[in-house]
Length: 68
Image (cartoon, rainbow, N blue to C red; front, side):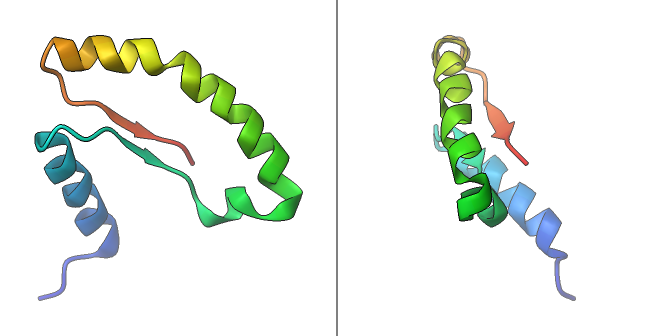
């Protein structure tokens, strides 16, 4: 039986978190020319989360951040 892609994707994120990775999902459509500048601006928002992510890691928490 095939595992639906969405479930496989989520499981991959869980496994990466167990290994200490912090995952950020950026959809392909966010990188197309019409949307690219907005996506780059959103990096400022992501950088603002850096301290929260580091603090969560120090507490031993897994961090799942998905940007859609």
